[in-house]
Image 1 (tube, rainbow, N blue to C red):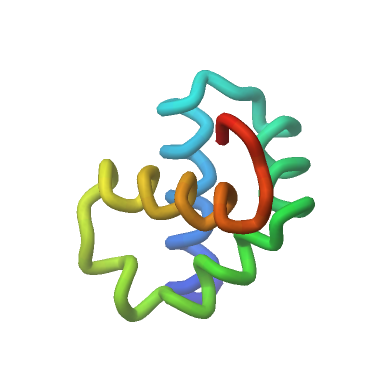
Image 2: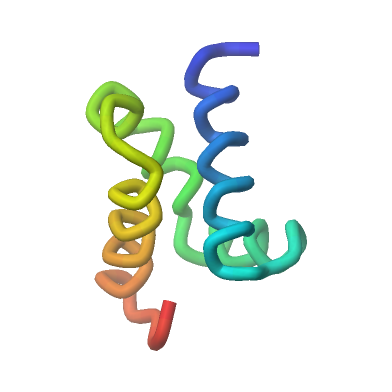
Length: 70
């Protein structure tokens, strides 16, 4: 598995835990707003940050795409 793929899994698990969501809920949310594509495309910058920053960045990304209360 690529380093980007491993990082994506890490982000999914951390987001799931932080937001107290199921894996299915996270995948539906990430699919609807193309979060996985964003994470992979920004891997070089994101993988150097902390978990809290990643969670906040994902929330901002989703909010920017029109979600309410991400």
